[in-house]
Image 1 (tube, helix red, strand yellow):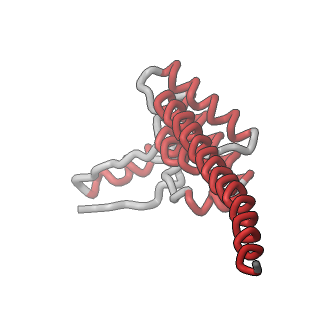
Image 2 (cartoon, helix red, strand yellow):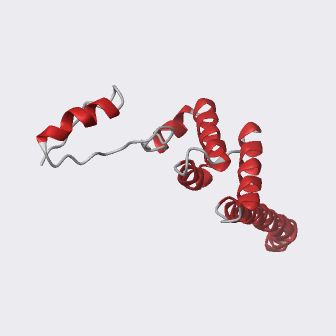
Length: 157
């Protein structure tokens, strides 16, 4: 009789425990699937933005940078977009897309100081650098007169 009571108790516990275990495993699976779905959506969104921002069409590039700027203002700027924005910021200084990319980088750096560490030292392209080749020492005074006062580096050969 004791073995029958014990068997009834094991049967009862197993009948209750099996649905609980199935529910827990299903819940864990659903949570993981939701995480994967969100990551895939984020990837698709960023891929679309990158395609726009890296486009050779100026209108698409402007649109992509505007979307990145909006994300940055909302605090959703992804560090994965940083290399593309940085590459665009190194374009012609007069291009509106270059200026927009530089302002995005500046604002992102102010918002997230850790992001500054990821931004490698890029050449500032707001000014121009002109190299003059001097073949004779007599040409040096003419070159000094025509150069800006800040250029005091000379390479002579």
